[in-house]
Length: 204
Image (tube, rainbow, N blue to C red; front, side):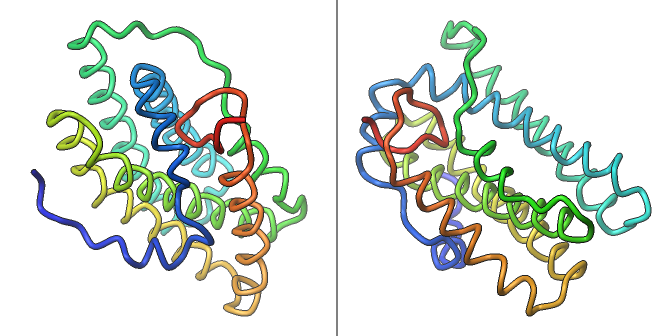
């Protein structure tokens, strides 16, 4: 097993833990979990690249998100390699409502748009890390090792997004926006969904 990673800052950051019902749902749908995980890695890379195109005057953002996008694509390659090894097909899946619902909270005017997008990036990375830690002990040795190995990078991505937001905004603005976004995230995690996804709520 990979060296243990302390994710207590992430657990403290999020408004709620992943419900046990989601873990049990994931264990019932291991192939969908891998497929949607691959999709999440692609989307994470795409989000970072989109921000790089939109905010070309933000040097630190460009540097951090370039590195982040490369890591997300590397994770995508690792997931599809595991899928191939396990003969898991890669069909199109509908997206979870999670990220789209969070992004509806983004303000339209700058710099609020950038601040909210970065904070949501931090929240999504934090939840991904928390879920990897939550599900890893329940999986077979190969997947447990892989998901545990992702904790360090996911935790760093959370920190990168949060620090970028704190550099763009005042501490007061971050402290006022984060509770709103985290409360919405908690609602999505604890409410019911009809289809299992990596960031879904609990089964309806």
